[in-house]
Length: 260
Image 1 (cartoon, rainbow, N blue to C red):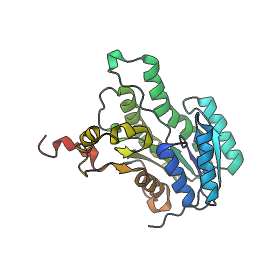
Image 2 (cartoon, rainbow, N blue to C red; image 1 turned 180 degrees about the horizontal axis):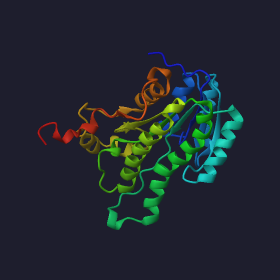
Image 3 (tube, one colour; image 1 turned 120 degrees about the horizontal axis):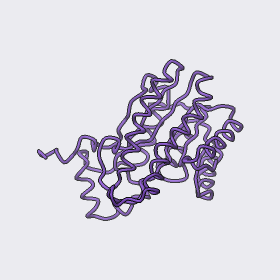
């Protein structure tokens, strides 16, 4: 399938590593102009941007803390000044936080997780839509997780935020449909990324994880990036207000595969 994003102006948050990095590279390869957001690793972000430029695409980096509304406003001002508008927003920035049962959890840590994973996409969507509604076009892609549906003991803040982001996606899609704007969520399952190498790099923990995936393997970052590129392209022009799971059927509760 040919994905054509030629000339599309795309802002991707949390793009200095992991899924954000690969999504930025995929969009650039498909012709998009990239705004590559990072929080605290400018060297890593610029290295990725340099790699994208070497392949002939247009890209620049933007620092912002997506959990801070004023910081997000400043980021969008820079993006619009650079490109004159926005066609695609990918809300990818996120953290899972430290594992803790609810009654043992630190309130400030719990709030931090929710601020980044839920408030951040809200702040970014709010700014993007100020331009998209006027131009009557645009796409917002929110990166959720299988944990928008599957509870995750010890990570209540993360699961609550991702579930909330799923409903935020649907609600915004209702609000902006008449303006020609699409809003979707993409929910990865167990994806092989550097941040979780301690899991897939250990034979025992890897086996336990794969047992939860009916398809029998971890996903690759490139598989998520290609799904993201499809969703923001015209090939998905009638898809909005829903979640695409890229998870090897993990969402189907693999523990019940053999009768529970």
